[in-house]
Length: 367
Image (cartoon, one colour):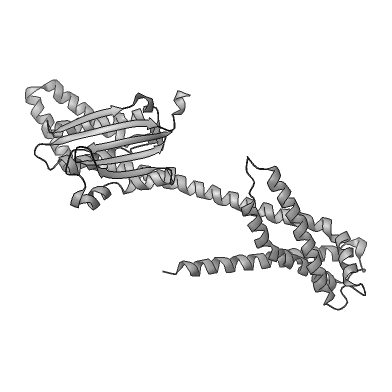
């Protein structure tokens, strides 16, 4: 695999080559345009026009990094428009002036290109002839860079949206795989079979819950963010099945702040955390255990907590933290960047406590 520095050098080289080719093409274009102008026919030499235009536009090529640097440090945004416009106007005047001066000094070294005029006379003449036509070149370079940046941001948003869709599909697939694990289905079906002899209505209800839960996993409207009440409904259906599977060994507590029920949360964000708690905190314990699901809002942040009373972190920390949570961590990073927290710690009852802290945003339906 090639080193990043090599790729950066290749990218810089390609950019320099592109600027050189563009400057050459533009210079030759304006030289030939002037040469074939009927009003100037026979009054100017082609080699003279080529020399003048190439020098000017090669200098503009050298100015491209300066213009891009100014554009990055003085960006246009909704809050600041007048100040950046004024700064870029002054920069365009300054850069156009510097280019005229350096171009005329360079042309004085080429015999016959400026006749017998002294250099200050040539510069004054060039300002009168070229300044107004050169000034828009700065803005064309600036707008080309801004258009490229806009396109790059658009492609980046598209890529991030595609990645988020893939993460959501991965979460759905993981949830379906979890439900279709043999022990899950066998234990659930065994519970249903046992209930058939003692409580037909309960067995029928259990079949319905299993079917509804599998349907909810496969179906979905593709939204990345859903109201917390919808996410909790999904988790409750999952836990209702697990409670029968574990008989009386699984107990679940809910402490949900009503204010947070309409908050937008990533779809299928809680299930892997609950599964992690069951798999590591309860499944291997003969006496079972308790899971607490909490959600509250404070200071513009929504905190969701999944806590069990199992063995906690301890020596099993790497496995507990990694189990089924790779997609969860990646989705949080893509949705919120650095504006989120995923914390693992020993809980108040000795088990593992997992906190997901995200910005508090209310579902649109409530507005």
